[in-house]
Length: 350
Image (cartoon, rainbow, N blue to C red; front, top):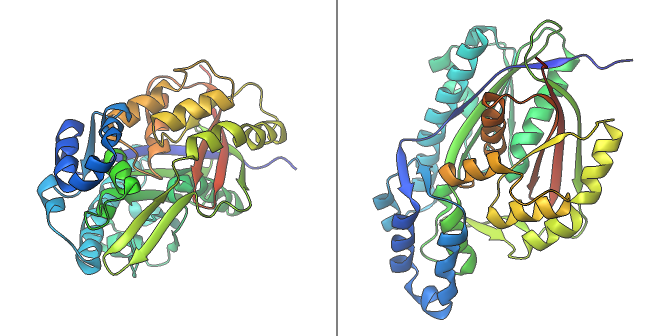
């Protein structure tokens, strides 16, 4: 039986108001992390080589100059993520020409804060979701959440043809900034991470000319829990990020990617990848035997937004679509687990 065609009726992105210029952040980091910089002077190179010019944050840079406990970080998450959820969701619904009251299922993907009730419940009154809408909050996918969340949305849309699924991906990575720890990982994360949100409206639709979502798959490598994730203590989340990640990607990413292409019966698809960092993009190009610089939309998103975790790949997809994406593509992202997530997509010809 042929799978029902799930169409992305719209895609929208949103960024918070405060802009962090990379040069300003580098000066800030040198002051906050004076001891690590003294021990490891090459840490300063991270800010230059990250491929980032600016990022967006829910809080101004002055906010990070003071210590904040778990409750303060959580309130900042609720405020900032709530506003971004509404902004991205409303923009996506408007683009699709669909009212919030007509949404049947709402998927919320976020791993950078805790919200109970979850974000879609908090946004319900403001947006006007109907009381019978199904809520599906998803936590813990990290950078893979954009691809995995969209894949989940496609599955749920396919299970109930005609129902409208709204997928909203929100991450506030900057709130994990930790001046109290100051190890190499904290400095690197200060150079990389930003905040952002994206939303997509999905439905089984035979007539729309929007991108069709197809096969999806994940691959989790055994014994890799320590590559990426969070630690948790009274101050909040702490970044876990192995410096060997680019080498791991270059050596191990190609096999599951090629298996997915074969299983999905794709013919030379374009890859649209999560821009985790300049070195990770280099590693993906190396793993897939691409010419260096092929992933240019990824590098442009990284340059202007940094690594926003889960929404980043949807920012790349949005950029690619605006530039006339056609034919087969594979959305790909890597996240805690350590897991690769893949989703096949076919953009309309013409």
